[in-house]
Image 1 (cartoon, rainbow, N blue to C red):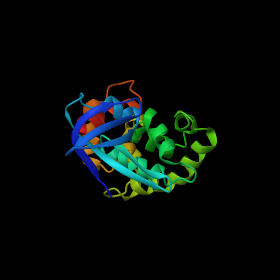
Image 2: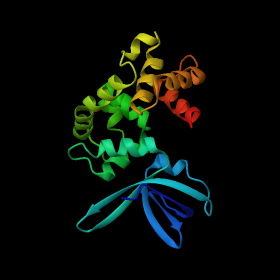
Image 3: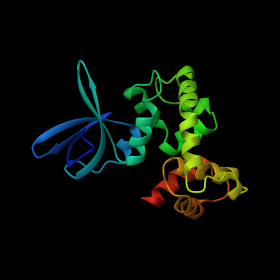
Length: 197
C-alpha cells in the first residue's frame, strides 16, 4: 500500500496529476478540492494516496490532506459508492461539510456532486450516520457538543471538526478564532481547517 507520494509535480489535468518520484511518473486521480490546493508545476508536492486494485488495472487517487483521504475511505465503504463517486462528492464538499451533511441527514447537499443522485446520497447518509455519530461521541468526554454553544452554526462546525479527528479544545479554538456573525457552518469549517493547518 502506498500511503503518500512526494515528488515533483510535472502535470496538472482537470481530474488528475502526474508526480515524478525518482524518475517514475505516478498518474494520480484527484478531486476538485485537491486541484485548487496544488502547488505550481515543477514544485514539490506531497499527496496522500489510495490505491484501487481491480482486475483491469491499478489506479491511484490522491489528496492534499489526510482528512480528505480519511473521508474518501469512509465514503467508499458505502454500498454502491466507488472511488469516482467518492471523488465527485469530495469535489464539491469539504470533509467537514460531508460529515455535517451526514450528521444532519442533508440529502440535498450530499447529492450536489456530479453523478451523485438522491438514492446514492440517501445511502451515504444512512450508512455513514452511525460512523459519524460514533466519531463525535467517542471524542474526549463524549458530551453532546451542542451544550457548549448556543450558536447552531458554530455547534455544527464544531461537530464537523470533531468527526475529522480534531480534539475538542483545538476544534473549539479554531472555530472561535474564525467565526463572524452570519457565517454558515460550512464557511466556519473551511476557515477553521485553514487555521488548523
